[in-house]
Length: 229
Ligand SMILES: Nc1ncnc2c1ncn2[C@@H]1O[C@H](COP(=O)(O)OP(=O)(O)OP(=O)(O)O)[C@@H](O)[C@H]1O
Image (cartoon, rainbow, N blue to C red):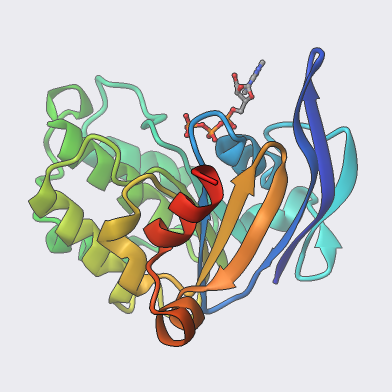
């Protein structure tokens, strides 16, 4: 389980996270939502220690992040981090050289799932295919937790559907996933839990199934209630 406990983060005088707490379970898809600038990416960065926090605690399976944690958790940011002149195959080789937990077989599987040509240069890929390569590089890591920041951003409906398919496939299996998205409609049916952020706090943490079955509401309905009240 990933436990985010009373995390506070300020940039200069601006306090972005004022005491954020939530949990994300293994085998579940947890979605962080909230309007622009609410701190979703900051939380993702904090979980993988790309951003130091001012106070609070983040635990992964009961332990604070340490040198060996990269075997447990991977972060797929919203932009590809590989050099544009690299071919997909070079990026895969780089991952293989660098990470013990790189799973070549799974990488090949995702490559064919997304129908990507590994000889293509990253610079020449469309936005959708760049996003797919980015996902490939993250999903092929044999880790327990995957963080994905805006995997659907700027992507056409067909690529979105294909990416959404990954969420129901064995590629995710019993791993824990935390995702941020503004395209909640696309994946609402796949998400187990929503963490709704507002003004530096978690305003609501709820199961999508519960609000659907007990209250007949969608996630967007809940968001409207929160932000338009
Ligand atoms: N390195 C930084 N230095 C200063 N301010 C920052 C930094 N990173 C983020 N911020 C600020 O923190 C706030 C939260 O940013 P963050 O990117 O986490 O929001 P977000 O919820 O992911 O937004 P979006 O939905 O637009 O992607 C914003 O006001 C942003 O300007």
